[in-house]
Image (cartoon, rainbow, N blue to C red; front, top):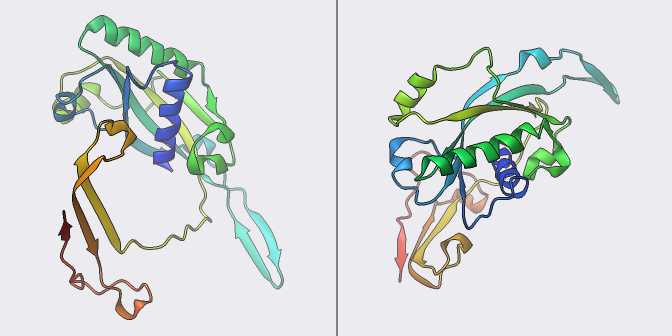
Length: 229
């Protein structure tokens, strides 16, 4: 769910902010000193660092439905606030300020996100997603302490709080992953993620007792990585 919100924000920055992917990067990494030392072009960083229930939107209204002889009691979703710290990074201060103002403008023009225009699982949200921008929340962290933890110089930025719904009755079933393949090679366009030449391929598989997909007991991974060139 959070990764879908990241993708939605990235789409918003590029499309509504009219920024080119060839000129500006959007990152959701923690903006610590190691990360900032690696960036090579103007970057908008959207770091999600806090997650809490929005108690003002809490509802305890129950819904009771009948299923033959059984009664099913369900509760409305929990409303969760996700807090992003949004900063701009560039070599020149004037470029940073211009980029920061562009992002602040587009976010302030977006009071809420419509599920139909969001990415992934957010399309199934029962409510629109409220967006609170550059506001001073009651539980605002000490920004100096926050940057100190990041071991980085303090930058100008703003907070954006986006509220999503968490369905307490929804169960997600997905197959377990028992194998993985990592390919390392050369690419003329890394953003395309297409390798022209695969130098190394590492394949790893975990034994599945009985072939029924049951994970092995602890220590049951007997297959060592295989290298193929």
